[in-house]
Length: 586
Image 1 (cartoon, rainbow, N blue to C red):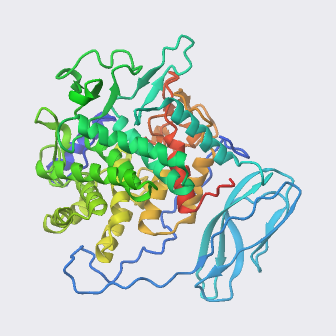
Image 2 (cartoon, helix red, strand yellow):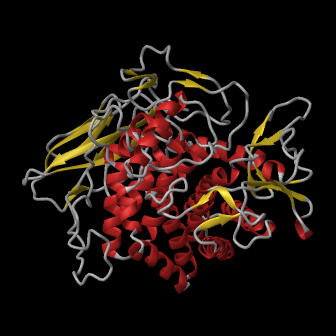
Image 3 (cartoon, rainbow, N blue to C red):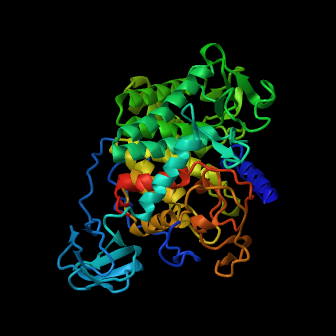
C-alpha cells in the first residue's frame, strides 16, 4: 500500500497535478446489528442546494449579479413522533409543504416500522399497536402532483415514555467517563490501565491530544447549547480555558503544541524522560514551571483546536468562554499570517507539518487544497469571533487574489481511491465545516458549497474505489456537510443515525477486531483487506477518533485496554440533538 501511494504521489508531481499531503499519523440496538444496512451506493443526494445559484461560480466577489435565495422546496415536515408504551395504540400524521397538491403514495423507503404499525399510503397516517419495545428509525417518502418526491428521516421509540432512552443513557455514561478520567487541567487525554488494581493509571496519546481534544471541545459546546446547564457550561469552559492556557504556556504568541500535562500528572511511562531538543518536549517557565508540554504541532492538531474553539465561540452559553475562544482564534490566525503562512515553533523553526501555503506541496510549488482549507477556515473563524477587519482582508486576499478558491476546487487530493489518506480527508471536512458555517456572502458561499460537494461529499465514477463522504456513513462528516451547506439528504442522515445507534457502550477501550472471518460482511473484490460497505461502529477498532480512520478496514487494533475519551459518540450525538435529528427521548 505504501509503495503504491509513493508511486502515485510521484506521478502526480510529475504531472504537476498536486496531490494532498499527509501529516503524522496523529450499543445498544434493538435488532440484528451483525450486518451493515444495505445501500445502492447512489451518490445523488436529496438536497435543496445542488443547482448553482445565479451568482459567481468562480467566487468573484466583485460581480454585480445579485443572488436570490431559492424558493422553498417540496418537503415533508419533520417532527418527533411521541414515545409510547408497548401495547399502546399510536397515531401520527405526516404532512408535506411547498409541493403541488395532492400528496400521494406515502411510504417507508429505508428502515423498518415496528411490528403492528403501518403507514397509510393515501393519508400519511402512521398508526397501530406494537408489542415490541425498541427504537426504530426510517425514511418516509411522498409524491406530489407534479411528480416530485420528498423524503424525511423519522424515529420512533416504543417503551416507557418516562424512562431514559438508550441513546441518551449512553451519552450520560460517556460523559461520566470523560469527566472522571479524561480531563486534566481542562486538557483532554486518553488513558492506559484505568482499572489497574495497583493504581498504575497513565495518561496517553500526548502526540495527538490537541486534535482529539478539539473534537471533545466541540461536542461539549454542542452539549452546552442543548442543555444550557451550569454543569454543561463548566465543562466546555474548562476545555476552552485549557487551549488558551496552552497557547500562553508556549511563550510564542498564538502557538500551541500537541499536548501538555502537570509534572505530577500520572503520565505514560517515559513520556517526559527527555526534553527539548529530544522528542520536542519542553518544560514550562514562570507561572507554567510545573507543566511539561510537547511541541512540533501540525496542521491536524491545530485544525482540531480550531474546530473546538470555533464551535465554542459560537455556542457556549458563558460569555467569558466565548471571549476566551475568540482570543485563542485571533492569536492563532495572527501567528500564521505574521509568519508567512507557517506554524513557527518555540525554536524559531517551522514545524514539520507547519507549511500551510495553498501553493506549497511538500516543498514544491503545487496546489494544496488541504492547506488552503486550513488557512481559510482558521482566518475566517478569527474574523467571525473578533470582527477585526484585518482578518477579513487576509481571508479575501487568499480566497480571491491568490485564487485559493481555485486551489480548493482543483487540488483537494485527499480522496485517492485505495490510497486515500483518511485522516487528511477528515481534516478537510473539519475545516470546510468551520468555513461553510461562517461564510455569509451568498456568492462565495455558493461556490464553496459546490466545491465541498464535488471534492469531498459526492461519490464519483466507480463506486468501489471512489468512496467519498456520502458513501462512508460517517455520522460526523455527514452532519458537518449537511448542516453547514443547508443541503438535505435524509438517507445519508439515516446511516449517520444508524452508526450512532449501534455505537458500543461506555467505556470505549482498545481491542483487536477481526472482521475478515465474518461471513456476513461482504469483502471488497478489489481490496480483500477491506469490506465493500462501511463497517458498523461497533465492528471497528477504537481509535482516538474512529471517524477519521478507514471505515472499510476489516482487521486491526490491539487488546491493550487503553481507554478512549468517548468523543466518537458524544460529538455525533450532541450534534444530532443540536441540529434536530436526534430526540432527547431516544
